[in-house]
Length: 255
Image 1 (spheres, rainbow, N blue to C red):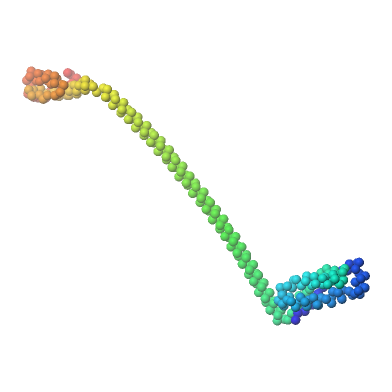
Image 2: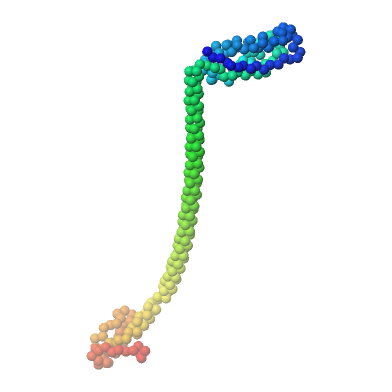
């Protein structure tokens, strides 16, 4: 069994409806049309809802439901009488049930607090996760930039090395080409200069530059080819001289 200690209903009467309403329901019209019907409407509401709903879950809707139910009847029975507001106090219930509901409310409050704390913790964790993600992205970006710089440095070093190698090869090629050209020109010049007459002259010069002349009966032929005439001259000279095959040092400048 539940009891509502206090129910307040605020209403007003439209001026042009005063005469008809007072005529039909007397000056205490609000008692007959409003207050006597409140008990009935509350019984109707409570009969279709549980104690849990009336006391806790739907208590905040009782005011509006009662206002709508009263106004619906007044619109047909007493036009011009308007319900402005309805205020219902918390109902009284048995002490044991009230303590249970209070305990339930306490647990519900604790649950809501725990849920709120969990949301806060989750929010903080999400914030930390986002911060860590941002920091990781920052580190990754820095690493990527650093890697890119190193790659560019290596590419630059490679290009510089390639340029230096190309320059070195060009210098060496130019040097080799120059030496080859010089050798070719020298070979061509020698080819033009090395005639039989020139070779014969060089042969005589080699003989003349010899610092030792042998005298005696058996002087070996110094030349067996076209220098035969010179060999015969030495043989004739050996017949005239009577030295016993002793070498004589001769300074080429004195001859």
